[in-house]
Length: 348
Image 1 (cartoon, helix red, strand yellow):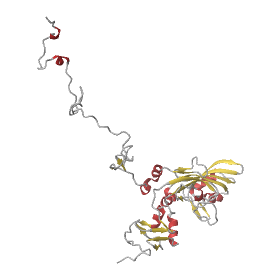
Image 2: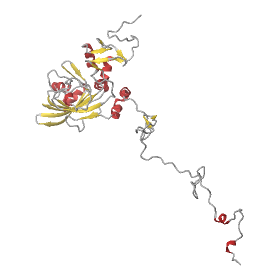
Image 3: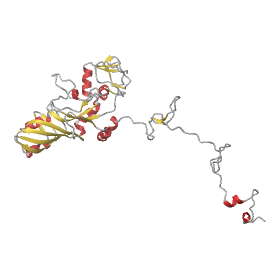
Image 4: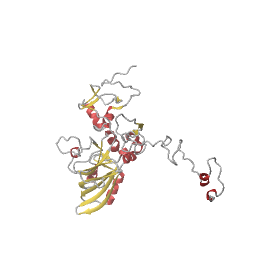
């Protein structure tokens, strides 16, 4: 039985489709998250091979021509991750319908197009992870990763540690179930109390809603860490890339999916030197017109030719002649030795 052609015009086997989902490919290119890519497709803003895509249920192999909002899908770059200290007053969205300043408008110009790992409310400050890989963002923000998000909270009101300990079993607020939360009182400052919270889900406005259920009104919220990544000494507005080696170590079993392509093996300091013996792991032939090196090899004189051999010089083959002993020097031309003390005889 023949499969019906896909609305996009791109063939795909119903049994073992080749390639990856179109939304995943768009996310891996850093355009947006997979969820947002699916919305773009539903809105008719994605074309494949010149035809508007109407459903995200399509696998592509990379040989197709994919256009998003009138622009060709950029080539996939190695996954990168940044730590950003979000100041209060910025919204975590690409475009804000109310015209408020976004996080992405405040990033340095040398930062490529990135997406956020989760979101922070406009008044929430602290650590925000950014990545150029939408699929990586989706992986890191899933609760299944098991990474703990830690917050420093200042809230108005009174509470005891015993009340906070009840959050370890989770809590239901207005029909929404929140998972276990670790909460500790740091200090009491006037009518406010400072807390440190640790949670794994990170649902929308989770900290504020949970503490409001306990009678506290949050007036300052700072994210300190997201899993193994901490805000450290970043000042508000600062951004710093996570070393790729550290990122791959933290991804564990998922590292292979995001690991960059392997570079050719190194062959020493001169491996990639222009004009060197090796470049990219392959011999590089010398080109005509190349400038001679600073120290050209000087040809050694041929000491085997007439006039080229000095006493004690080099014979053909590179070996030196054996020097004569004192007695051999005193011997005659026939090879016979002179009489003892012959050179000391007095003339008559």
